[in-house]
Image (cartoon, rainbow, N blue to C red; front, side, top):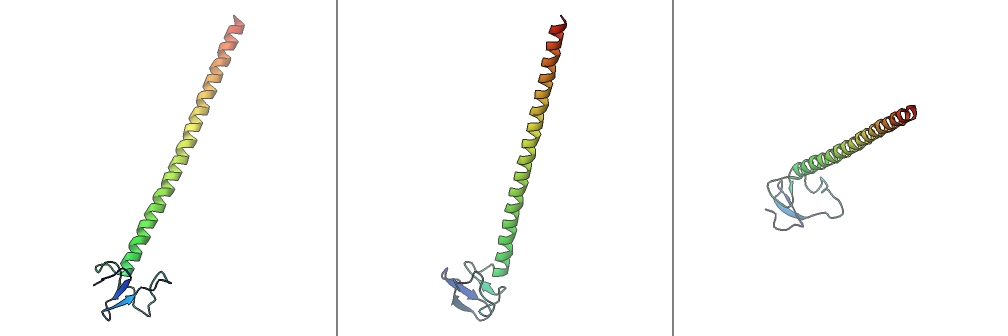
Length: 102
């Protein structure tokens, strides 16, 4: 049903319209989104837009989660390093005091 990539197939009147390149979505005056097909015949523009939005949303959410998790891990590892440094400093100070007492 879609012979060319430049073709926008409209099921309402079974015509192949040149895809309106200047606008991302075809205007409803040409063909409604639920009846418009582009690229493949089995998926309409509404479903394509919803699928792209869901995939883009999942990608954004996963990137956000990864960034937050990485920042949390860095903060946590820094606090652990700071605690270890404090413990080492305390032990050094205790050893120094013990050596002074001797």
